Length: 477
Image (cartoon, rainbow, N blue to C red; front, side, top):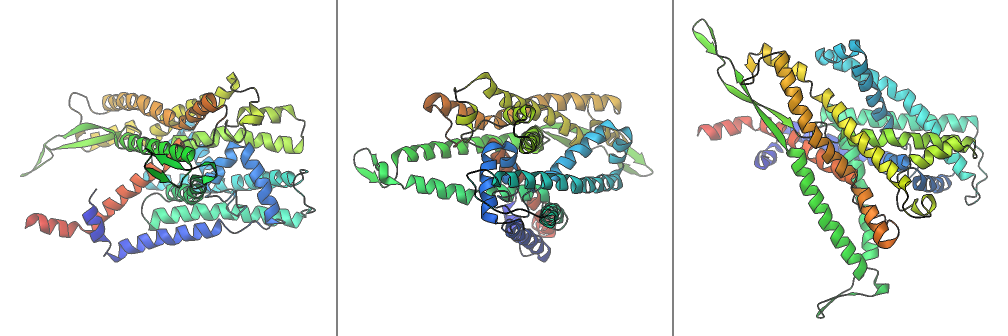
C-alpha cells in the first residue's frame, strides 16, 4: 500500500468528493436504521422482534446486514437480503441457461442487462419478505407475554409493506451509488458498515460486565489490584487475543495468491516490433471472497423463516416446526430449549450443512468471477501464452486445474472460518454446560477484513492514478 500517495491524493477535489459521498451515504443509512415502520406501537413490535431474534438465525443474519434495522423495527428491516437473494437466483440462472451465459460474456452491455434483471427481481422478493416479517411480528405481538390491543387495518398493512420494500430498494440504490460515485463495492461497504455499527453496543455491554466488581476485583501477583471483574477480564483478554490471531490469518488467506507468468510473443510490423515481454496473472486463493459465506447463510437460513411463517398460520404444524428446528443455528439463546439433554447428533446437523454450502458456493462463485475460458481466449487474442501450455483450450484447461486446486484449500479455509462460532460454542458446552454467546463471529470478521482490504486496495489504486504525475516526476528526478 502506498499510504504516502493516499495522503497526497486527499488534496484532490475528486478524491475528497468521493470520500464525502461515502460518509454522507453511511450517515443517511444510519438515519434510515432509526426510522420506525408505521405499524402500531413501535415498542411493542420491538419486543416481538427480540423474541424472533432468539429463534431464527436468518433473523440474526438479517439484523447483522441491516445494521440493527430489524432489532430497531426500522424501514430497512428487510435490508439487502432481497438483493442478495436476487443475485443468487440470477447467477444460478446464468449458469443454467446458455443464452444468459452468452449475455453475461457480452461485455459491459450484457452485464448491465443482468444487473437490471437483478434489480427487477429484488422488488417482488422485498415485497414477499416484507409481508412475511410483518405477519410473523404481528403474530408475535399476540403472545400472552406481550400486551397489545392493536389490530392493523388493510391500510396499515399496505403502508408498512410499501415502506419496508422502499427501504430495501433505497439500500440497493445507496449501494450502487457508492460503487459509481465512491470507492469500492457499495453493497459490500454497506454490509461492512452494518457490522461495524454493532461494535459500540457490544463494547458497551462488555465494558459494563468488565467493570462490574460486585463479584470481586482482579489481584495481579499480590501487588496490583485492578477494579475489574476477574472472570470477565480473562475472558475478554482471551477473546481479544483470539480475535487478533483470527484477523492475522484472515488477512493472510485473503492476500494469498498464485502467480502465473504470461509471455507475449514478439511480433514485427514494418520497422516496429511489438510484444516480447512478460507479465503476470495473479489467481487469488479465495477468489470468491466473502460472498460464499453470505450466500450460504442466507440460503440455509431461509427455510427457518418459511417454517416460522407456517407455524404462525398453523401453530400445530409439524412440518413448519421441523423446518425451524433443523435450520436454526444452535446458539446461546436457543440451546436450553432446543437441546434440553445437551449435545445430541442433531446439534451437528446445521454446522455440517453450513460447511457444505460454503464449500459448494466457493466453487460456484469462483467459476463466475474467474472464467478460465474467457481469460484463455483473451490471452490468445493478445498473443499471450503460458510457457509449456498451448494457447486456447489447453490454456483454459490448465487454468481450471490451477483454480480447482486453489479452490480446494480456499473452500476448506472458508468453511473452517465459518465454523469458528460453532467450535467455540462446543468448547463452552463441554466445559461449562452451555454456550456463553461469546463466540468469535467468523462470518462477521471475514466480511470486515475482506471488505476493508478491498476498499483500501481500491483507494490505493485511485490515489496512485491521481498522484501519477507527481510520482513520475520524482522518478525522473
